[in-house]
Amino acid sequence: MSHRPHVLATALVLAVTTFLFHAAVLLEFAHHMSHVHQWFADVLGSARADTVLVTLCFVSLFITHVIEAALWGLFFWRKRLVPNFVEGVYFATSSITALGYGDVVLKPPWRMLGPLLAVNGLLIFGCSTAFLFLVLQKVWGTL
Image (cartoon, rainbow, N blue to C red):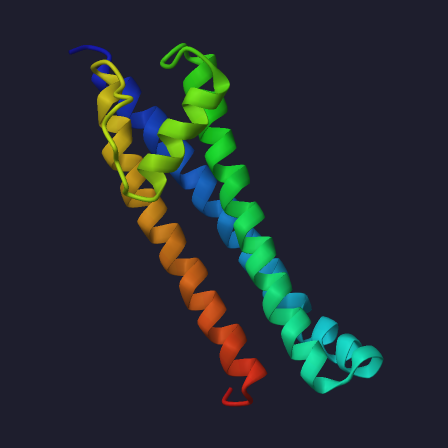
């Protein structure tokens, strides 16, 4: 029982750190998006520039989500909550996506990190979805 405040504090620090990393990636990408799109349009033409920009956004967000899952997985492994790094990434990914297979479960009091990670993941995926929507609006000229 005495470890629970520590577990909650650790989870919140990790969740906030992950969210800040994700927000930084989105904001940095948004900052450069117009210039990058214009450069691709000058080099490749408008239609191809749209395709490249959307693809670049999808790939960048995919890599960002993989890095976030890997960081959580590394945390789980280093805290000896899972037997190896791959298992940590597997647990993190199934939690972040709210898939939650349940075949890998953390021991109490760390078990509460799974649902907290799921909430964090849903928020982060929501931000990614909103960002992609804005990119598609820009590409389709409705912004």
